[in-house]
Amino acid sequence: MERCDYDRVLTLAHAGAKVLHSEAITLAKKHSMPLYIASSFTEHQGTLVE
Image 1 (spheres, helix red, strand yellow):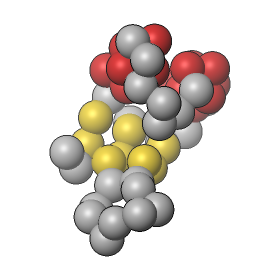
Image 2 (cartoon, helix red, strand yellow; image 1 turned 180 degrees about the vertical axis):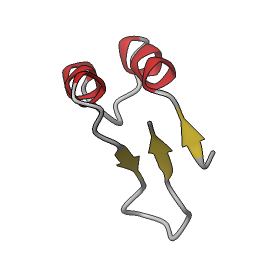
Image 3 (cartoon, rainbow, N blue to C red; image 1 turned 90 degrees about the horizontal axis):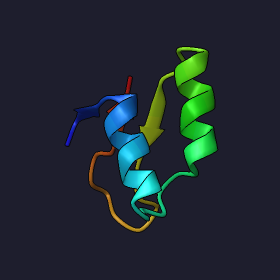
Image 4 (tube, rainbow, N blue to C red; image 1 turned 30 degrees about the vertical axis):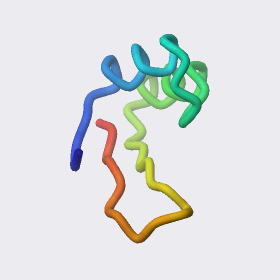
């Protein structure tokens, strides 16, 4: 997934996804900061959260 919105990532965090803490997502959304989520174990492109 190349792009995703804050609300979808926040929903995943609340559902138990351990990629990002929900408070980090809320803070980024509040200040309109883009987030980039990627794995440190693979070379796959990550996801830009806007």
